[in-house]
Every structure is written in C-alpha cells, then in structure tokens.
Image (cartoon, rainbow, N blue to C red):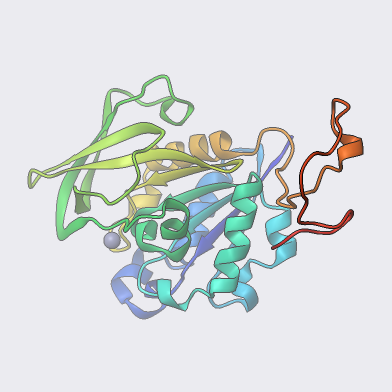
Length: 259
Ligand code: ZN
C-alpha cells in the first residue's frame, strides 16, 4: 500500500541567498521529495510556507501519512491555526519527521513541550553520526556510523524530553556531541527528529541521508486506525457491565460535556 508523504519547506533562504539557491535551485523541499521518490512505495508531494494555509489544508493533511518539516528563519510566520491542525493529525496517527533547524519550529516545540534549544556553530565541520540502535528500522542499511564532510555543528544540551528511542549520536570535528536522531510517540503519531540539513551544504543530496529519510518515512507511517479526539460520554445503560448509577451527577443525559 502506498505511503502518502507531504514534504513541507519554508522555502525562504532558497529564494534569498544565492549560496543556498545554487545547491537547491528548486528549493530544499524538492530535493528532499526527489530523494523520497526513489522508493516506489511512496507518493510524495510538497507544500511551502508561501501557499494558502502554507500548503497544509485540512484536505491535504487528511490524506498525509507522513509529514516532513524543514524551517529555519520563518518559524514565527507559521500560523498557529496550522500548527493546531498539524498537531491534531499527529495525535491521530500521522507521522512527523522534523529536520535540522526545525528543532525550533512551532510544531516541534508544541509536541515536545520543552525549549528544544541547543548550541550551534557554522564552521563547515565534519560530522560523524554514530548508530546507537542498529536494530531500529531507521538505521537499516547503515554501518556503525556515517560521516558528512561539511556540516553546521549542533551541540548539547538539546532541550528535548528524553527520547523514546535514540537512533543517532553525532560527534563533530570541534569536539561537541549531539543527540542527532531520536524518536517520540505523541498520541497515536510517531515523531522522528533528524539533525543534518543546514542549507549552505548539500546535505539532502547525500545518499546516506536520503536512505535515512526513506527508512524514517516507512517507520513513521501510521499503523492501524486513527485516534479521533471526541471525548465521548458512555451512558450508564451502555457500560460493558450492568451498573446502577450512584451519587450525584453534574451532566444531564445526552449532554455533550465541556470542551
Ligand atoms: Zn542550520
């Protein structure tokens, strides 16, 4: 069965900074999407900040199994209503892959509930990503580690809640380390944060990075049915076992309850 992926891109630095446009002439989102399209099981479309509803209409999100998120300089321009909409879909079961500077996006901070802060340095350093969970679906096809020749450094402390699963830990030429691949479950949705992706380096053209993203999209795809937030009342007569109501009640029969 096909997995529907929506690749979301902020698409600002590609338009404004020649060094970025040179690496990603069609926008980073198109390069990320092209890497994912190597897998025939995926149906991939893109969406950007500049589109109506940032390209994330209810209809698009309803038919999205996995959303990838890359943003950097325009996190504040993302509408809170769209963040609410994406969060609702994650809680229902949509997978979310947050990339690089997306650590500071509204949606990631909302879902983590923490600062998501980190330390950073732009010096074109080598990054070595160690696989710390070789049995994990996201790490399949990788060796003990892989390296990226030129990256921006991200260092600890990374202000995230303790991950459910740690997939990668990075070491940088300058000496810092960073939890560069980690997963969480929020409601029925799986979330993967993946660190590489600074826009002045050709990170999303790298074959190993493409492999990780393909693995991650398969892993994050929903399993089973959606969890719908409706908070339904179960009347006394519909309890699985026969009971008699005792004590006082606040609600009238059939009342919807507070929202
Ligand atoms: Zn960066």
